[in-house]
Length: 121
Image 1: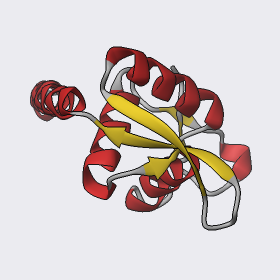
Image 2: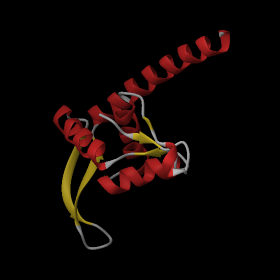
Image 3: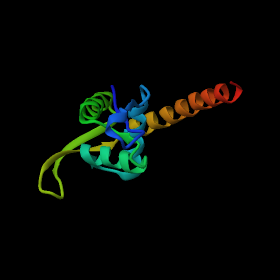
Image 4: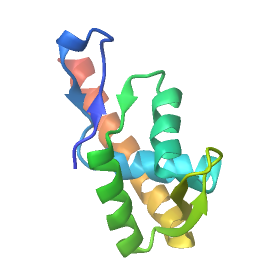
């Protein structure tokens, strides 16, 4: 699962990957905040809230959403976008809310440990 982080608006600078496992956290949090969204809206929201640093590619987003459906973290139903296009809309389930809590807890624990290592180096 590889999503991209664009740290520099210069296209020649390249891109870094979002740390493994973080994409689920970002998707779950986005759905928790915004409710029912289709894939493009999820990617757009993550990009906007990260001030254009995080860019989730379709090739990462849709397989992640499919795995999340299988795990029972989200449900999906077909609908029509504002632009009159057919799209699959995703909604967080109670299991997804529990997973979001676990993901946030783990992320905070790992980031705290990384911060402690960086500050002592």
